[in-house]
Length: 485
Image (cartoon, rainbow, N blue to C red; front, side, top):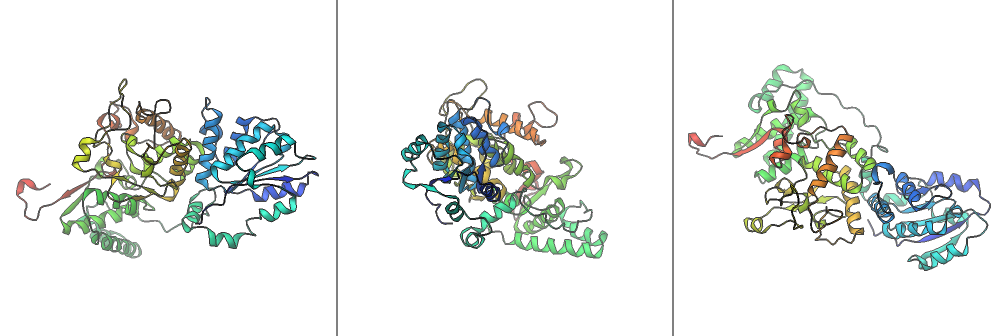
């Protein structure tokens, strides 16, 4: 996609308070065009809440009670940048105090959006004109009548052809991933109850017990997955974990699909001296449901609606990698692309492990320095292409840190009051726990120490495979009896 145009500001003169313009604003409101109708007499804090509401957020859940005005508008700008907002339209600006417009100018400048101020009074005040001329948008500030405004900001249907040429496919797919706008997909034919036989006999058991039509579906999926797995160039633990998490098991549409894929991958890896072992007895009554990712479209939509930038990004990473926040303090801003599409925390050599230090230097209370191996669940050989539902969450916090002045090598997560002194991990852990409780997610590594449902926080970080009862063993071609796994 081409670079976004430079931000501009325009005052739309509507002295007759034409109702046609109000209807036009109703038609303009969309995901990328924010239409604000602020309450008369509201202050800068109320206007920030109106911006978040127009973005589809819950202001009460996103903003802390003690948040400063600067942090409120920094949060608004971060969400606007992540959502790709192109236009901010503010209705009935003549009822707002002049000082209230100043944060909107900063918001438009930071997010790169055009600012349209609808003035329904007789004439704009001199104070407003002076403020616009003294702002950074002075060179691109205009006075327009409604007809010119209609021409400059056409309806979506009028610019549909231009959008199809300008929009990237991944942006369109991201919009489709939004559950508030996505069409209801056609229900696929459900799978029958599949046998829990181990992989050497799985396909034979399916052929013996399933009806003909279901047997053919299972066989087709099994053989296609086996063909893909047999062509893997690397069967190391890191490479297989990334393959299962990012491509095959994690994004599987149903638990039954994940089970068939797992059995096929197990069969394909065994001739290559790699045993992928699965222990379903440790996963409860429905072990196949534990194979797919916990970071679903519904969860992502809830995070985008009711979580601040830090909690949303931390929870998204924790759910996607299925691990606690220990090691999140090692993530730098350059490890995540500004659009949230790629995440890459590189693997460490032995020499780098010895000299690895966190970006904070003081221990207080029960804090301890992050060990070299505690960030291993996040480290990969190649960049991870994040799912579409996670990108807006990661991009929002990236934009927030950029607005704070963070450079590419600075930490992605920081302690709010003493960023270079204290670790952000305890605070992130509490934020993830609160967020998951609000979303009714019960994960083993969320439980406190000495809890019979999980002792993840006391035993250290787990990994994606361990949470699913999976383990990888590389076999020797001529093993001794005591070397067999």
